[in-house]
Length: 299
Image 1 (cartoon, rainbow, N blue to C red):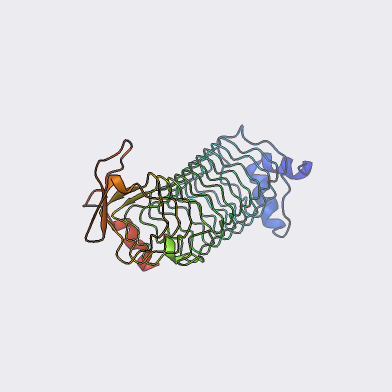
Image 2 (cartoon, helix red, strand yellow):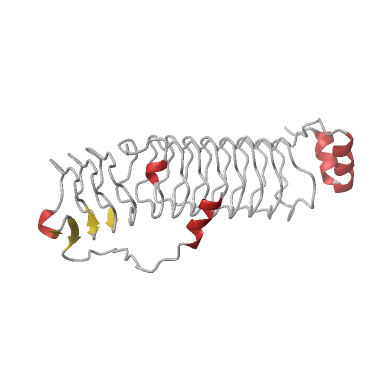
């Protein structure tokens, strides 16, 4: 429970600020408090505060700095957290589902088993964050910075990762079923060319460079491979039933024992294309805007 004296000080912004300036080494204890009735935090200094089990749901917390705070089991569901900062925060089991978190900074934060279901996290800074077993179903992480992040065992079905930077990230056992992984250099993760421990069935792998990828005996049913580079990939024994091919390069790919719908596929000059476009076809436009991708070259 919250420290009553700390909670009383928090109710008065001026007293709160004066007290924090006088005792900068004290970590305020606002655990299990309910401040969700406030519209915002009124410019209070809330760095390094204990918010464990607290309720901050639905609040407008745009641009607020929560660095090094404790949020274990806290409720931030449906909160507006655009450009807020949680660097080095302890956010294990936090509920951020349906949060609006565009540009949020969670670098080096511990988000183990956190709930980020349906969270809008475009351009989020998650470098070196601990996302083990995090729940990311249908979250939007397009163009997020996930360099050196740990996503081992993450539940990321239908997550949007378009243009995300995953260099050095650990994707061991991550479930990306139905995920949109376009423009992601998945071969730069800790797994390198070995993708066998990543679940990718029904994922959108359009336009990816998967040259030399090890995908042996993987479940790749209904995966989208439009304009994907699979040259030299090891797909022996992989289940590619219902996979979508369109101008997919397979020169040198190993396909022994792979399950493909060969009757529906045209193979010409080591390029695979389906005869007919199936229901749910995701078209690839030849003129794409790549400006967002260029920013990583300057980081």
